[in-house]
Image (cartoon, rainbow over all chains, first blue to last red; front, side):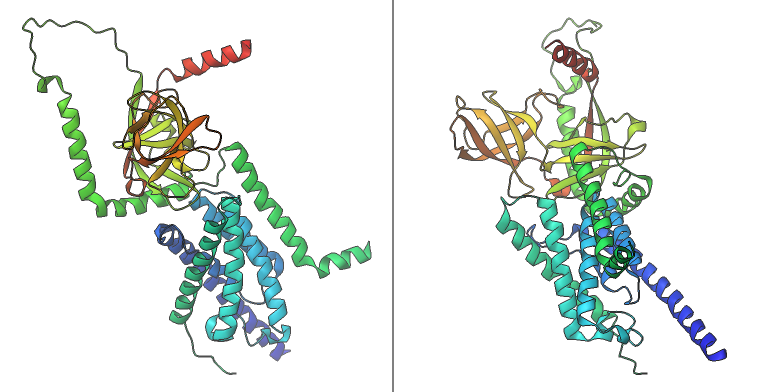
Length: 186
Length: 277
């Protein structure tokens, strides 16, 4: 049957494109994080962790197993450069779980065909900023608390979490605007 | 059984989360408690090589500072040369010197990765076990104490700097030799340390120098910093004081790894004593 075959070919083409895009995004984000953002901090309080944008921007259709595996690989790659085995990995896995919850609450399943990726240009400003803010906060909360692992410096830890989240979301919005594409109506 | 399978597939996200999260935390906890060399750190071939490449670029930016500090060190060493000392005796004859034996050997290395803004900070240097570096030895730079080596690969090593929750080195006040412990201050400030557990007999003054005691990995008298303020501790048995660190960890470029040639002999002897008790 020609039409279904064409559909299948089309989806295959889209999938291979999505794999290449995400692979490049992974490498670029890890490079930016490790060689640029790692050296940036203001008053030891605000450190951006932009690399989590990779998990945020994975397509909606990605199966849960793959999502967790990618989060794990991303975390362990960052850990290798930061010399903290397990720390970023644990935070990234939490992030992946929260992503699944957030998307299942806010996005209808049948909308996946038109909206392949949760980017700023496809999903709109309001949805994206809520999505980015919630997920970034959860990730930073887990990461910084696990790193400090004590309640003795609680004010310091909380201000670090809030300011770092602010910085990260700001960078995410900037990168979203740089790659902004006018929504294509089909 | 069937119902259980349906249940698991329905909530697969949750179960996958548990599996991945537990394995991540296991890696984290295992690494923290045993400090065993794992492959996930910046001394492996890939990450170490990348860091070395980037650090080469970055070193151009601070050439001037480095030149200044090297020139200063050169001048200091030149002052110690025999040729720059005035001999006030005339009869010179050569004596083959058997009193002194080289105990500490210094290996110079370049810092290729550095961090100061986290709760636990590490440095990576471009020398490794091929150059004679082993795990657990001390590292200094020309202005003072830096930390100790925790991981070694063939060409790279990772140093746990003084700016680390678990770093603690034996230190003393330079003038009256009262012993204490130096560690990082609780405020995550890369320029501040805390000298703990100094005996009450000491009368420390603000501005007094703090140096290594010679009881740990370092030779005696390596500068650590100067006392910036005094703190009283709850019990009043011992004194704590804030130390302004001599080393600027944010600008480290070259460090010296100290190989103590008698370390094996000393630890062997001490282990024997422990066994006897």
